[in-house]
Length: 255
Image (cartoon, rainbow, N blue to C red; front, side, top):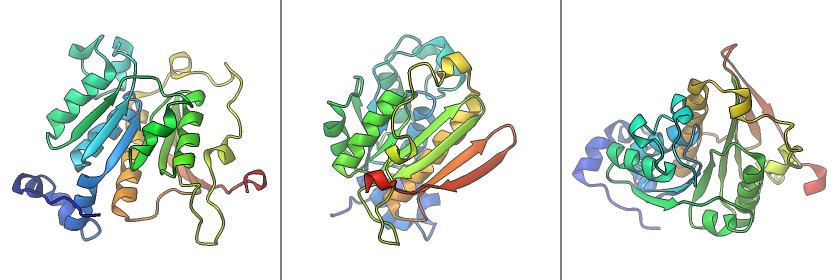
């Protein structure tokens, strides 16, 4: 693939990336060529979209069919008070273009379902999951596995967060198949078993931490640097200020 060039404004804008040997001009051009789909323009999606836009990702797709409400503003920092009652996707687009006018934004103002998910994720290089319900998470993960697209997944609740990268269509260094989302969660929990953020509460800064980590994993995947969290689940305990990582594998049932 021929990578796009960077104009003078972009060379200055991304100078702190370009000076990094791990990224450099070639990595920045990969970011410009990349198409990233972000599912949800809420708590996790807000920092993901802001940092990927600032990083110079060329095309950002946003899936969200909700409107901005006052209770969102405690954590969904891409939206402001002036955005109340506006569609979140449109509010997020305006914020992205304020951050970086070089980014192309594609809006999908709909609810992602198992039926429409494959075509949506197939149109992008990778997907970042910022949803808050298991039904959509399973639809996203299954579609990404089917369409062979990497998925950066995170979840939050109260004071805790988790993060992983899913590439179940590839093999690991030992020759085994990478695990899928269903190796972590074989089936959605029964309705009502896991309380929503609205019911249980969540600290606004927590989603900022986890969403920023998602953006970092996406940048690593695009530029080919570092070791993505494939087969590893990063756990963050905000109250203890502690990170832990556990490894997980492909289950025998999904071999």
